[in-house]
Length: 207
Image 1: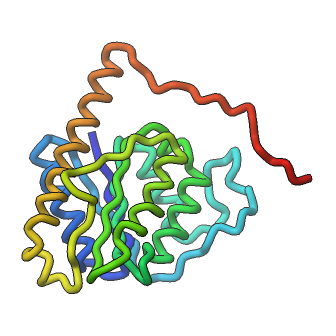
Image 2: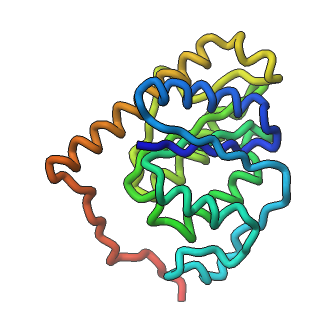
């Protein structure tokens, strides 16, 4: 089993990376492989709704990010998306990437467990979690919680170790993710497969 952790921060070793690393360390102790992928600071295209990806599962923009990560996502069993809070909201970078990944590579995420992690100096954490959690809800993904909301106090990397409750929350998140992955695997071994959703009715009244 493998969990893919996406660091939506432009800082490679910043607060969000440290929070994700705490989750990853706990997953590793639970015999779950992990990979943290770094978004970085290079410009990223927004989704333009061209629908070129429909049927191909491949985004039309070749920016060495989205299509490569969709390929990684198809091989993963679970996900953790991390973001610092910018203006009470996740970063624009991570939202652009997730919009394209979930639209072009929906099959890579369907029914797989997911969790969001955010770091902030003060406010905007729960609002940011709400935004990120909506990706999971739309792809019928079980959302993994912890012993508190998945957030760490992060005004600067050197402050992260002082948030003992935040780091505890990250470790408990890792435990819960590992437990759910093992439950899903055990279910599949006994013949329990994910349900097929009805996709008949669309509320498109405007013509």
